[in-house]
Amino acid sequence: PAAGEVILDVKDARKQFGGLVAVNDVSFSVKAGEVVGLIGPNGAGKSTTFNLVTGVLPITSGAVDYRGRSIAGLSSRQIASRGIARTFQHVRLVPGMSVLENAAMGAYLRSDRAAQGGALASILRLNRKEEDKILLEAKRQLERVGLGDMLYRPAGSLALGQQRILEIARALCCDPALLLLDEPAAGLRYKEKQALSELLRKLRAEGMAVLLVEHDMDFVMQLTDHIVVMEFGTKIAEGTPAQIQVHPAVLEAYLGG
Ligand code: ADP
Ligand code: MG
Image 1 (tube, protein in one colour):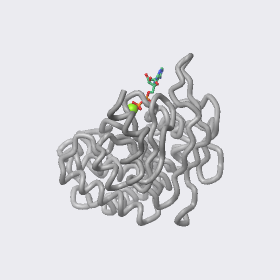
Image 2 (cartoon, protein in one colour; image 1 turned 90 degrees about the vertical axis):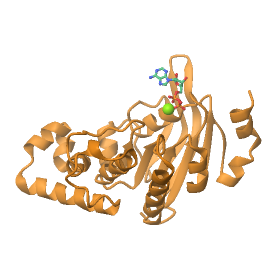
Image 3 (cartoon, protein in one colour; image 1 turned 45 degrees about the horizontal axis):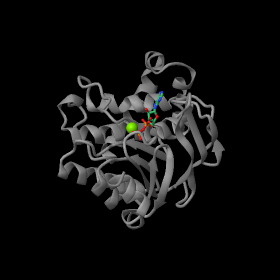
């Protein structure tokens, strides 16, 4: 994508669970080459917003456009294959499988076969040539994130910071234009956070659009270009890190009450 292209456009997105409005007509966008932070207290609606973008939950009203086309109503598999990749709040790797095999799982999802059936079915149906192609792509992405010298180690033997980076490599195997990260810095040591931040800066420089939910304010403030703040389902503020740090409604949400 060209720098500045609007990759994700969320317009008046609403999600109700019965009488509870978890996401209340929220709008924001993410451009290519931009890291956007989505922050707010527990229960604010951040994860639900992620779930609307990734098709895990159907939207009640409003619109979600990816690269100018509506993705509302598509399945999470279809959305992933269009180029939206995500990581989860808790690490989801197969600890006994190698780093390379874990990363390759991401590439299976993007393969033509996966569009026709389940991921497992598509793995079983792969021929040798397709498998080689997928392993090559996984290797390329692992080198891109700096894990190229750990291909054959069990994923479970990696430090938590490296496991998080492995999850990003797996997400990159889908060749995404948008990366959604749910609390990528949680539980990491200072050095690991720095390595993660460095990787995300590199991806941003390459034109990736990144949306992240994160509680670590230092991490958010030093990395993001733009921040969206939610409370009780509503967007209460948005702006640059410098603007958000002195925004009265944000200070009230975090310190007041
Ligand atoms: P956050 O990620 O910001 O902590 P969530 O998006 O998880 O917030 O939750 C927003 C609100 O929606 C909360 O009140 C939560 O209890 C509610 N909620 C989330 N998922 C569901 C669900 N599947 N069914 C009913 N209520 C839900
Ligand atoms: Mg959450």
